[in-house]
Amino acid sequence: MYSIDWEEQWRLHARNFKGDGFVHLDFPAKNIKLAPGPGFGDLSHPTTRLMLQVMEPRVAGKQIVDIGCGSGVLTLSSIGMGASSAIGIDIELDAVVHAQKNSLLNNLENKISFYHSDNYFVPNHWANCIVMNMITSEQKIAWKHYIDIFRDARELIVSGILVAEKEKYLLEVGQKGWRLSDSLEEGEWCAIHLLALQASQ
Image (cartoon, rainbow, N blue to C red):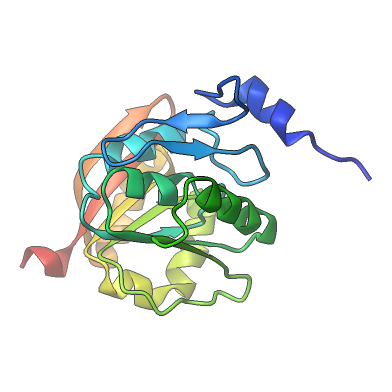
């Protein structure tokens, strides 16, 4: 069976990959390290970078749910940005194991939990802010299966959306009760900050 050398992959493609074998992220509350592994989120893709830029001024003091957490980069970074707590959910077991290792690496196991949600398990965790970096077809599945999480949240920061699809996406989420607050673009991709309509009434 072919085995992927994740350290080599991250060394070649990840941003801020240092000689100690980790990706480094510097935030006001805590510096974060990420070890190479199979979870998506090594900073090489524009959507990850966009998410971090949109998240940084907005997540301090909040309870975060990261849907499709991958390597745990957004979950962990939210704590580095000052979030009070965070959980990450992913349907890929390898990604969850990778994210858990990154949590231990950063001594954040008391503030962060990761869940393997292959059966769309919804942890008993209220969150006022959701972060989600997935392509739109995957997001549609998440909207369907994590109804309670979306119902209770007041903010949503999302990427994996093509700039060309932005207006269509905003129309669809508007019908679900969300309105545009702000957005950011890099190349063909965008990240969007949304507010729940009930939160602004």
